[in-house]
Image: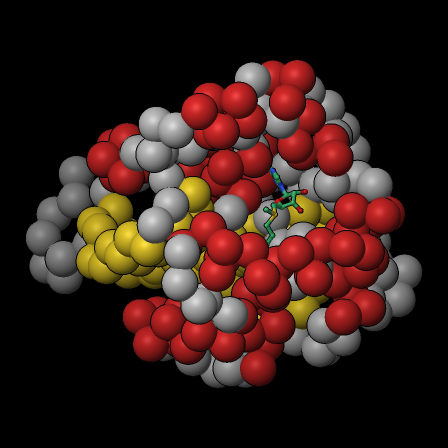
Length: 242
Ligand SMILES: C[S@@+](CC[C@H](N)C(=O)[O-])C[C@H]1O[C@@H](n2cnc3c(N)ncnc32)[C@H](O)[C@@H]1O
């Protein structure tokens, strides 16, 4: 089922291009970090932070161009493919995918982020939707690929979030993760406290265990920043799957 028809059935209809489809109840039971993204001020400032943040966290020059080039090199997104950008914020990965000719469902909990994303990335290939990816009700095996830029650190239940992503990727499809991995430092311990963000800093081995049926093909660490590409197993032709 095309994503657009799924959305028409499960979400409010888009009123106009660039409008945001809304999932009822998407904002229930969130971490403090998730809630902070609902502020229009956070959405306004987010892209400026995003431009410099990886360089600061990786401990070496790491601008958006380098990140986009790394993603394209490892995942080779192709025109006509369907991608989900899970926790898109202002649409960095959605924009990279649209420029490659992919159709993108750019999903986020925060209407303020989605509005800012639609303003910054006006490509017709992108549909914007307010969804909680942990319980999105998107169809299984739907997407050729999923991008996740740091959403894993913020989401309320990272294991459930990853399970959902593995479910919606088609067999043979790919998952691109960028996240801050566990370093064991005091700052991460502080930011993990519910009142101070409730962030998670997963260990790569833990991430792999949440993605049964997906194989890690690429893993790259730069300081606290971790990039990974997974591929979902495809059925072997002629082999009985029962
Ligand atoms: C750190 S920002 C990452 C933005 C973007 N992926 C990027 O690469 O610039 C995380 C975003 O994920 C969204 N988010 C967090 N948990 C989510 C969830 N369960 N479902 C959908 N969006 C989520 C937040 O609202 C926020 O905009």
